[in-house]
Amino acid sequence: MTDTITIRRPDDMHLHLRDGAMLKAVLPETARHFARAIIMPNLVPPVVTGELAAAYRDRIMAALPEDSAFEPLMTLYLTEATDPDDVAAACASGLVNAVKLYPAGATTNSQSGVRDFDKVRGVLERMAEIGLPLCVHGEVTDSDIDIFDREAVFIERVLDPIRRSTPGLRVVMEHITTKEGVAYARAGDANLGATITTHHLIINRNHILAGGIRPHYYCLPVAKREIHRLALREAATSGEPRFFLGTDSAPHADHLKEHACGCAGCFTATNTLSILAHVFEEEGALDRLEAFTSLNGADFYHLTPNEGRITLSKGPAINYPAKIETGAGPVTVFDPGFPLRWAVRA
Ligand SMILES: NC(=O)N[C@@H](CC(=O)O)C(=O)O
Ligand SMILES: [Zn+2]
Ligand SMILES: [Zn+2]
Image (cartoon, rainbow, N blue to C red; front, side, top):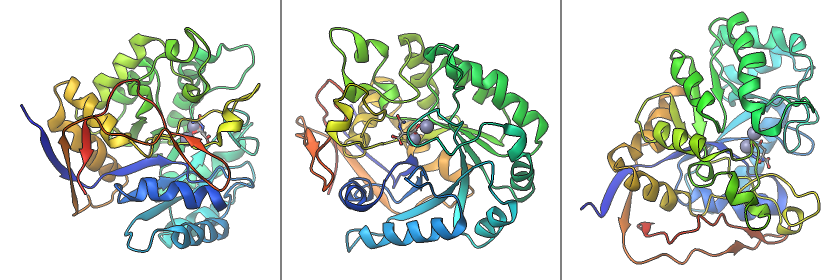
């Protein structure tokens, strides 16, 4: 039985670092194990221009622990007013690795997102020309669509039409949560990728709602039925290049999660690699962990895989903190509900 595994240092292709005191507290949790991460731009106000992305990048670099070689990969927040020339310049200078599409109202800080997709046609065409990926939060926002159906409906009504009308556009389906998402990603060509989070490999909707409401398991897209969780596990552990890790680690202070109208987001940065090793071992796929965490995402983003390595070994249960303290209040670390035995060796 394998109890040690060495893989290339991983990348997190979907990460929320926030800003200020929260950034300072959560950044080390990712930088400890990950070499790079695609940084989400849904700050308040959002990171909508190259200038704002450069300033945010500087704040991240300033918040890094001293000995860290972590590299933030920046994104721009797409709005109906986004200037294609600004996007192209930010891409050409190497400042940004992607543009993020939030349908307006779909998730945390998405109010400035897109309502009328015709208004972003010019930007998307320019991105297709220059090969800059579009990261998509794939949920419709119509109040008459059931929240558990919003991803599948988005694929049919929005994503597929956008891809058909913008040939060559490179798209990442972010944090897929359904078997429909898995099937659509699989049917695509090399211009299509999909991130899968850590928590969606662990929880289904019962974990959120059965026996009491558990706000720390609430995120968007919301976890679905068990059949969908199983489809995600199969996809993540398949080794197929289309699927890669984007933790969507999304810290919110506890008082905003444990609230009459609680924020969406699970904070998984602290224990993600231990959880993933557990999942891949359960699926008999430890030999494909590296593809999911360290190879497929880099490949999609045309980045060289990291040269460094990390070693995980299986031992006694690890005592992760239940919360991390931040200057903005405590943040609860995602609880997978079982003991974690795979530790990243120092
Ligand atoms: N995933 C979440 O539930 N929340 C994210 C936003 C997002 O990725 O949709 C956040 O910024 O808090
Ligand atoms: Zn999202
Ligand atoms: Zn996210």
